[in-house]
Amino acid sequence: MEDDCPNGVNGSGNLLPITSLRTISSSNSISMHTNQSQGYVPLAAKGHKESVYALAMNDSGTLLVSGGTEKVVRVWDPRTGSKTMKLRGHTDNIRVLLMDSTGRLCLSGSSDSMIRLWDLGQQRCVHSYAVHTDSVWALASTPTFSHVYSGGRDLSLYLTDLATRESLLLCTGEHPILQLALHDDSIWVATTDSSINRWPAEGCNPQKVFERGGSFLAGNLSFSRARVSLEGSTPVPVYKEPTLSIPGTPGIVQHEILNNRRNVLTKDTSGSVKLWEVTRGIVVEDYGKVSFEKKREELFEMVSIPTWFTVDTRLGSLSIHLDTPQCFSAEMYSADLGIVGKPEDDKVNLARETLKGLLAHWLAKRKQRVGSQPSANGDVLSGKDVSHRSIAHSRIEVDCNAENDAMVYPPFEFSTVSPPSIITEGSHGGPWRKKITDLNGTEDEKDFPYWCLDCVLNNRLPPRENTKCSFYLHPCEGSAVQILTQGKLSAPRILRIQKVINYVVEKMVLDKPSESVNPEGTFTPGLVGGQLTHSVIGDGSYRSGVKPWQKLKPSIEILCNNQVLSPDVSLATVRAYVWKKSEDLVLNYRLIQGG
Image (cartoon, rainbow, N blue to C red; front, side):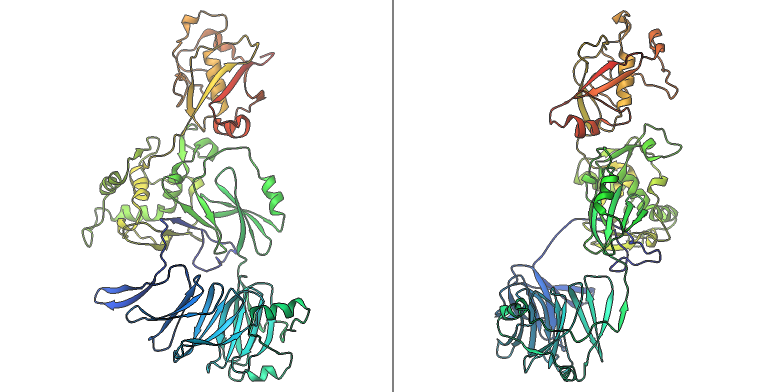
């Protein structure tokens, strides 16, 4: 999740989240666009066999250069998409390109640490500059293309005279340089840090800087600068501090999804550790500058919940990705989520409720508009249409436990003050991005992935993995307690051990005629195979079919691998942390002494 700023800056100082509903695709061609009567139509410049990292164009738009992992500079006519030449010389990925206004000269920076000057008229490299000791990622030239500023992975900013090869180290920092922007007597430097710095530069008369001394002659070979650096003759930077800094919000550089599958622990570039609640898109705890590893260990819970989302922090902010059908694999009881007014044993699908929370504003606006005015083009789908479209794609399941309304429970309420954004890919209308509060109900339903709408409008979920857990229930060795059940049992993975205890108590035979208990009676909510048909009421008494001896309320404990299990843990947790085997789970029961 992220906000509209590259580093997630907002008034509260937190990084706003973004949820992505996505389908991933890739291409190694360059798309150019021509203006047609109905908009821009892409014109593909095909020829690259691998990734394209850099582009540059002359002022008149008649030449385009590109470079990437093929280690060559390709020159194109952007008006036709045709390739005019290919220039070889670099020995590693080309990361940045720069062209003069006329389109005659081109500069390239590469991961081989070299800067090369190309004459496109002669179709060859005319100069090579060994200035940096690592990858070159950014270039900026003076208006006359006589000097070039360069930066990259070695954290250094250099100024080089393209004619005399004289080079000067202007400054060094703590972060790799990504972009440069020259303006009058200053140069703006963007790095992997979220702050932007302005450094002195003589844009109109760069030769004045060389009068300070400390320059060196750029070599022709990439190892020449590296060798000088290793020998201890490292140039001394001209400037120590920037003239101006624009501070940014520290970007997230480390994250960990916690076992409860609702919280994500993050660490940013300032060393601050925070705890996020994914289902609400907010920071719930700011721990300050503490050890990320120790805090992760401190927050560890022995709980097993399926993974239903993925996370990335490549933009320095928190991005949450929901992919169908995996995102619908996680369920929790309403009691565990603290939902008031909902039966404790109701199962809540985390992805479904999160989608309802994200689209609450859209659903409310849509409800106001449905039936009040016709569609502008007649193509807007109704809920029924969405259902029909999804059936055409795959088999569906109806969530019978979910009410068919737009009610959003507190654990899934997203902020409208600092709202997250949604990015969707894979919909019929193409990719788009909006803050959740900007959705006004007029959006074409074709712009949403069909599975997303089918979920929030019709309670329909895609086919999922088996959510049941099979297990055997046997008495402990030497135990006099017996229950009437046969064969393998099956129950929801989230079923708590307390329910198994209730089942044992209800099925116990305490010196009473066995015919008084139904030998084929089977497990309580959701247990299949030998399934419990009676369930325990909150006060511990039983509903229909109470046996006289059951009023004694014997105390039972459940064990797995000789370890006594807490009544609060789920079958999935027992299987993951106690049983630790691929075969069916085996549980044992016994009467507690004195019970």
